[in-house]
Image (cartoon, rainbow, N blue to C red; front, top):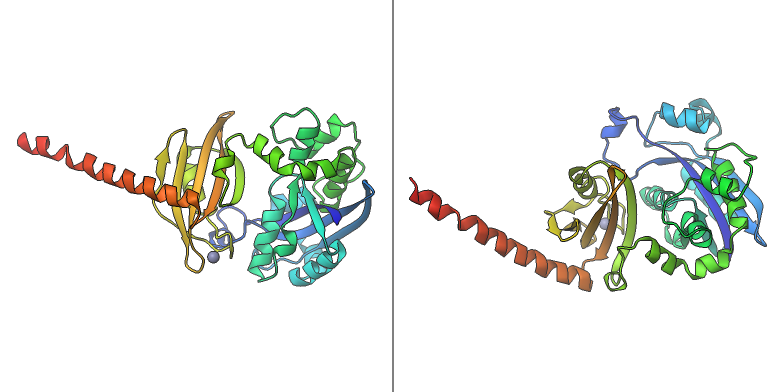
Length: 320
Ligand SMILES: [Zn+2]
């Protein structure tokens, strides 16, 4: 068992650029991998690599200035993704447990692996270190930045920020102060406490859950979840969405479909959060109890909808 602290930097297209119009099943293309092993609870061996990009030709200027990665350097020193992954996977060892600051890195890594038809299974075991940090410090449920966590633990930065290895190293310094074995053992409970909307009875058949912050409106949330976020959990490709059904408490559900992997139940819940929305997304197997129950609810809703539509038609006509 190896505890690996991972941080990735990735490229995203400039909004409105030709690359942005390409419908790719990745949210970003990995350009830098940084990782640190925890050895006896202390930051140990390090891994750092630049990765050449192919899907998005231009390096986004904002990302370039944030990460300090220049396009010329990426072209000159970047390793091809499959080769980079082979090396990284070998470095990780047989039994990696990944820790990332936030929810984004591993899903993005898996999208990138999927687009190259590479194995995903070795990335299955991962933990959002933010949640373990919150659970073992003051128990609040906000998502804190790495910098805030460092400030709280009085860790002075010694490496550059927004550099994959720098961020991984600082995350490792935070995790040095936590009880990670305990964090791992209690992780399911920590997640559940954090996502207070997840009740035990909802979870059987649930394949994935993801949280989004800062979504502007309900319309945007529905469009995004049925659109660019609607990716097959098996192959990572875009899925077709049906119509949304609303339920109590700003919950919505949709039956979504991958041409190769069949139907899944998509459920989302919106919560207002300082002027915007937090969206919790759950994806269930098509044959799960949750999906069966939802199909029944949707059928009822459709019958009700048709009845309602027919009824006002007759008085309308009577007035003519
Ligand atoms: Zn699929």
